[in-house]
Image 1 (tube, rainbow, N blue to C red):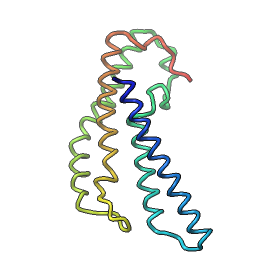
Image 2 (image 1 turned 120 degrees about the vertical axis):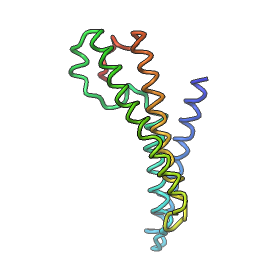
Image 3 (image 1 turned 45 degrees about the vertical axis):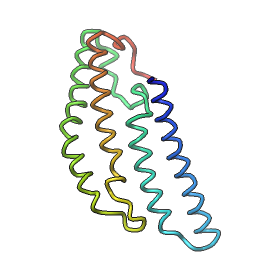
Image 4 (image 1 turned 180 degrees about the vertical axis):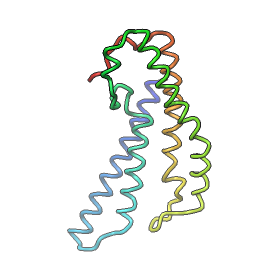
Length: 159
C-alpha cells in the first residue's frame, strides 16, 4: 500500500514538474519567438513552483534526504540518539500540529481572493502548505514510534 501511495505522490510531482516545463516552453516561445510575452505563463509558473516545492517536501523527499545537522547525532550513543529523535520530532510535529488550525483557517479564508491574471483562488495556490504541515505531523509521529522501538538509531544520517 505504501509503495502505491509513494508511486502516486511521485506521479503527481512529476506531472506538476512536466506542467512547469511546458509552461516555460510556451513562455519562452511566446516571449522570444513571437515577441509577445504572455502574462498567464508567469503566474502559472509561480503557482506550479510553489506546488512542486511544497508537494515534494511533503510527499516525495525521504527523511534521509533532508538537510540535517548531524555532528552531535554521530557522536551520541543509542540512548541519547533516542532522546534526540523523540525531542526533535516532538518539536517539529508539535509545532506543525499547533500551526495547522490557523494555517488551514487562513488558506480557507484566501479562497475569496484570486490570482491577478488566472483568477485561481489563493486557497488552491497555498493548499500544499497545509498538506506539508499534515505530512510533518504524521512523519514526526511515525519517527517517534520508531525511536521508541529503537529503530533507525544506529544508522548515521550522513549521505
